[in-house]
Amino acid sequence: MQSLSNRAKILEKKPMTLAERAYLPAIFQGLSITLRHFFTKKATIRYPEETRPFSPVFRGLHVLKRDEQGRERCTACGLCAVACPAEAITMVAGERKKGEQNLYREEKYAVSYEINMLRCIFCGLCEEACPKAAVYLQADKMAPPRFERDEFIYGKDRLVEPVSPDTRSKRGIQLTAEQADKLRTQLA
Amino acid sequence: MTFETLGWQGLVILVVFGLSLLIATYCTYAERVIAAFMQDRVGPDRAGPYGLAQPLADAVKMFTKEEFFPGGASKTLFTLGPCLAMTTALMSSAVIPFGNAMKFGDTSVHLQGIEVNVGMLYIFGVVSLGVYGVMIGGWASNNKFSLLGAIRAASQNISYELAMGLALIAVLMISGTLSLREITLQQTNPGAWHFGDIFAWNVFKQPIGFIIFLVCAFAETNRTPFDLPECETELVGGYHTEYSSMKLGLYLFSEYINILVVTAVMSVLYFGGFNYPFQYEFLDFLSNKAGLSADWAHNIFVLMGVVAMFMKIFMGIFFFMWVRWTLPRFRYDQLMRLGWTILIPLAIFNILLTGGLITTGIIK
Image (cartoon, rainbow over all chains, first blue to last red; front, side, top):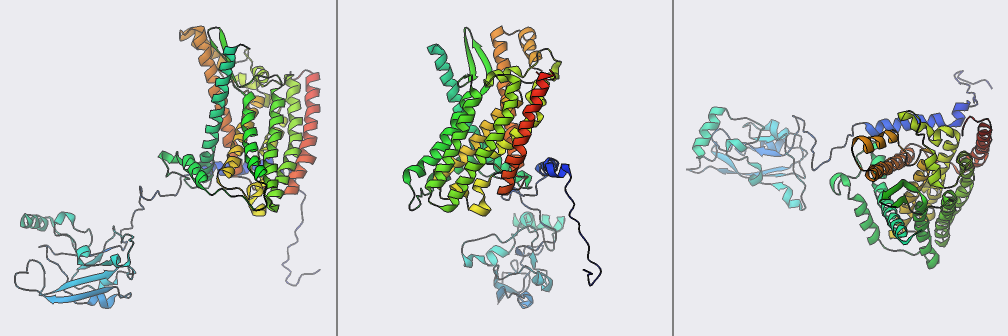
């Protein structure tokens, strides 16, 4: 029958050669393939012992930065909360009292600052929105799994980075060596 | 046979028994690791270093599972099935010569459970009994899938035993004996050049017979590509569909012991058993250059033979697993056609060829 498109390809069923019928050459071919795979390097990363390297632009757990004198940078302006598409950030602003100048950089500060890690989509828009360079997403830390939902609401206790220049987050504005030395003497 | 030698042979049997259990245990681990490696995975590596305690964990799992009896099943036969499979599997390793005779003063200890002059027949007899375990278990399950699996196992084993037997007849024509020890001892050539000793192995005299034997060995042990009795895609689990707990474990275990036995028989019949290349040079070195007493030199020489034998067995087991993770399963009609219309005529042709070559004196 003439085909309508003229593109029909006529296939002939060729009888198999003796080598094909004997099946053994095909088996040896198959065996060589599996043996090759036997010796290839495996892609598996054995998780608890080995970890996958993070990308340098990975967006992980948030950190609230301190400045070069160890004061919190955040002024509770709320821009991060407004920018957040997942509405994961809430905060309560408060006024700095006298004698707290060494704790907070500006006159207004965040009395509480909470990020719900279950809501957060780790887009990094808070980091972009922050005018004080206070909030950053760290490239080397993730929010670890937990059993209870309320444990995923991170308060300032878990978000603000340590004062000590040696244990500070690697993200955001870094201290110069001079500033770090000064801060060390101040702490001591 | 004196009482003392009887004690020695008993010890040898115990060691062989323990070793076959140990090897079968680690076969489960090896199977998983080899499967994983061939699929670009790493396999079990959590239990112990490199996952070496995995068989132990598996055994604990098996023992703590619920012991299930299907409704309407015959309890006696249902229990008898795995027992029979395991017993027959363990029995067959008794006549395999794992090594030559060791000498302790006047006593000489053959590293072989029982030395019988019909070793080959014994193995055949016991291996044929093995199908009863599968058959009884599948039948007693009162399940049509189990029964189908059991029937498949029975007809497959019977069909391939025929071709296997015919392939062996050619070996027996060359060796002229049924004793496995004698067959092993014939496969060496003290006069040959160092490495040329391996050319006395039967595989070089019987290449066609070896391939037939190998294919039949896969079918006899119900291994892929002939694992139709436990074909998951068609029969759920085949003859052990209804089995759980350690009864299932015994079935799986007996399969590995069967592999061990069949590879051991294969290395005895075709790969020179406990013979190894450079063995006479090694013996010469031990007794003349290393300054050992004649007995010690001989014993070390024999122990190396045991090591060689086990190397051959392990390579055989690896090959079985390698094939399992390479080839897909045959269809049942293909299996039967291969057995009856290809392997049996080929085996008969091989017998004629061997006979012709013996009469013309090309092989002895």
